[in-house]
Image 1: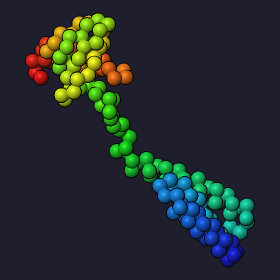
Image 2 (image 1 turned 90 degrees about the horizontal axis):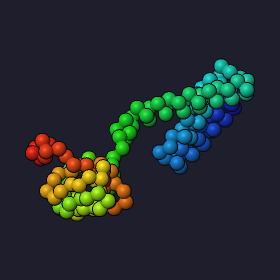
Image 3 (image 1 turned 180 degrees about the vertical axis):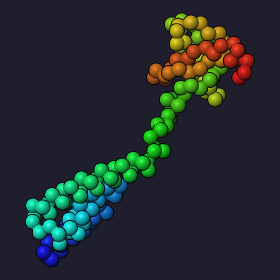
Image 4 (image 1 turned 90 degrees about the vertical axis):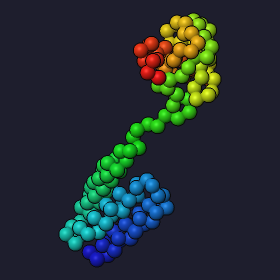
Length: 153
């Protein structure tokens, strides 16, 4: 019985070393906890098959608990941060060259000129404010902002 405790503690140590060699995944840490639980339960369960099932159940339970713990701690990572051209969506820009049906015009956003198409193929004249709806390659798709909203910009 004492040798089984030592064997399970050695197995646990090996899994802990494997976890230290692969930080950040917590994959081997579950096996480490399963082995440790089995080593602690060995005085009560002498059957190798029973110990294996304790190891298996302890590993699965540890894996599930660690997964729940990691998910609860990483809620601030779930919000997708828009970057590059995807960050343009929702921004407001000024039309500097008229946008016509099937012919792009230019808008100015933060001092940078972008080729723009209207979302519904309507003409949008110069000095009108638009909202960027989407991007297609190096072009942006815009929608004109109503007069009432433009007066508040």
